[in-house]
Length: 479
Ligand SMILES: Cc1cc2nc3c(=O)[nH]c(=O)nc-3n(C[C@H](O)[C@H](O)[C@H](O)COP(=O)(O)OP(=O)(O)OC[C@H]3O[C@@H](n4cnc5c(N)ncnc54)[C@H](O)[C@@H]3O)c2cc1C
Image 1 (cartoon, protein in one colour):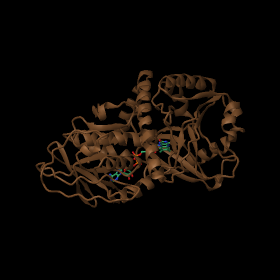
Image 2 (cartoon, rainbow, N blue to C red; image 1 turned 30 degrees about the horizontal axis):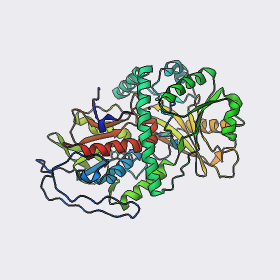
Image 3 (tube, helix red, strand yellow; image 1 turned 90 degrees about the horizontal axis):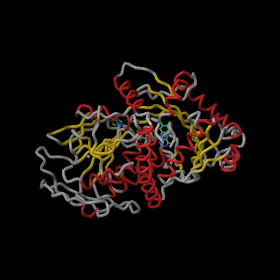
Image 4 (cartoon, rainbow, N blue to C red; image 1 turned 90 degrees about the vertical axis):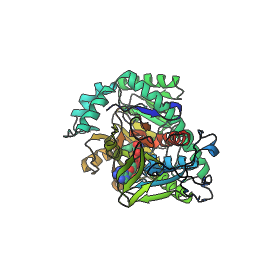
């Protein structure tokens, strides 16, 4: 199960809360020569033109800083979640021709109603030593946010064992460092996208407050804060009264907490709106979308993937990026690539919360003990949480939604119209360590790029790993 990755881009290494935390090929590889697509102008929606001439192009090593020298490739991005769409954006920006394939519509998977947090500083992985102390309570409590449904599924057991093996201080600290670096790149990428396009996505930069019920948890959080301070994070430990100063809607609940960690630079946005905006911008920029197409298998010749077989036909490309969320392992397994990604199910409710409602939080809030996050998205309050290991099960369990509503009412009694809450369940594509898999898998086809396994931080990290994939595709001579 060891997945050796050739990390992209000189291996920029990427690190919060323990819980929330393609081208086508020609048979004998007579690669096509094509006109370099014009750099995409999303503002003006210019489409590009390209053709095949059957003459192998001589690729050049380049960097994103000099995209004019990049070999123009046709990249097929598999998956139109936030990760696939951000990847398509970065690839198109780097001058590549892009096709995006998905069985559903853009942003319909785990990216549709997630917790909305752009949690750039709060990236501590779920795999943390503190899990050992919490595990008995988490597994035994009837309304526990963590539920394990043991199945006759070797992937579930293998993932769980690897997860437990990762619950060590050294692994957690290493993952935190890497995720922080990736999150920094992602913030830069998302901010640049937002500045350039002005997309309407209920974006806010009002900070994040993580509440700790007990002294032990708060003390551990302060230690994590000290570690992150050395890594450049700006955070402060607050008393309950100070928490209310930062977020007045906590006046009712704050007396019940030991304290909170405030990260003023954290942001939030509606991930689904970001996906919709990216879809529209990419279409305007000449990216081809093949939606409603089930991806069945990858066609391999020699050491390259030549095509992807879908329910809407075969699509050839020069390189393929796998961003299928929890659907990723099944696609690459037949190629001998063991991807340690397992679905961690979670739930959310979206509550109407007009601006005038005084009890609606303005700051993103996480209740660390209950493992629930709250974020204002426009005139709605998004409440998300829970982790269930039960395979590809997307059913919305009414009792879990009821529990989420009860928690939300308890923390923010005036937080919105809870009677009109919209329920949702989604599957986080999680690796045991919490670090996404971004790069070419050693031993796999050389033009097969993985960009998946972003777990609880896919929205936060999407633009960062997308940039790494684009730099990899633009710089690899032998992709
Ligand atoms: C409850 C909850 C709360 C969350 N909160 C946050 C948060 O606050 N902040 C944050 O950063 N992250 C959060 N996340 C995590 C984040 O939502 C995910 O990491 C992210 O959405 C993953 O994006 P993705 O593009 O990899 O996967 P997805 O969005 O699931 O996209 C994968 C796509 O692949 C397609 N697909 C799969 N298999 C096939 C196939 N065989 N053929 C064709 N198409 C296929 C699917 O249709 C889907 O569109 C949360 C997740 C959950 C569940």
